[in-house]
Every structure is written in structure tokens, then in C-alpha cells.
Length: 111
Image 1: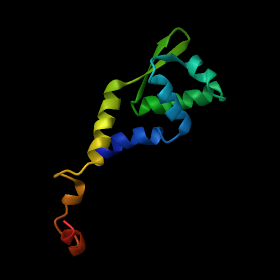
Image 2: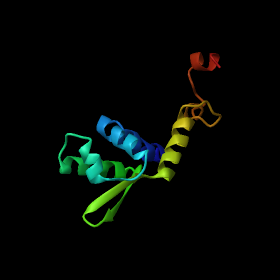
Image 3: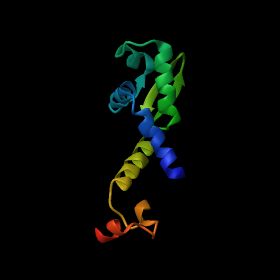
Image 4: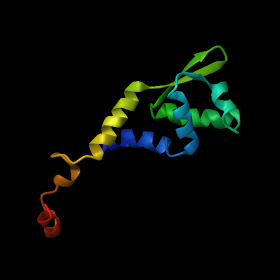
């Protein structure tokens, strides 16, 4: 369950279209919060909330420079999340569905 919790935070954060758009923007490189804000009709505090969620799940990292924060994607988290998504969408010998030996007859017959 722990590994699922770690990665579902990323998917939950990306469940908001504006946050998904922000990640898309950051795919081109680091951006200042002011540059992100220019693309949206939202307040500074709303942007801060979105960025907080993206940073907390690990997909985005921020760095302070003067009074501005610059954001970029965290490649390590993105690569781990890609592998996790590939893993849960692929057939495998150690799948969670194979953990229970007492599966129903209909399921066993379909194998």
C-alpha cells in the first residue's frame, strides 16, 4: 500500500487541469513564478497553493532567488512515476491480483 500512496499523490496533483498545464509549461525548462502567473487568470496566492501541491508530491522543485521562486520539474520523481505507471498497467508475475490463491473459479478458468 505504501508504494501506491507515494505515487498516487502525483496523480492527484495532476488531476487539476491548471496544475497539469503548469507541469506542461515546466517541461520546457525552469520558470519564475511570475512567468507562470502571466499565463493564468489567478491570484498569487492561488498559484502558490498549486505550486505547493506540486512540490509536496515531488514532481516540481522550487528554488528561491531574491524575492522570486523559480520552479522546475524533478526528473527523478518523474522517471519513478513513469516506471510506476508502466508497472501498474502491465501484466506481470508478481501482480497484486496473483497474491490471493483463493480466487473465484470463473477467474481461474479464464487463465
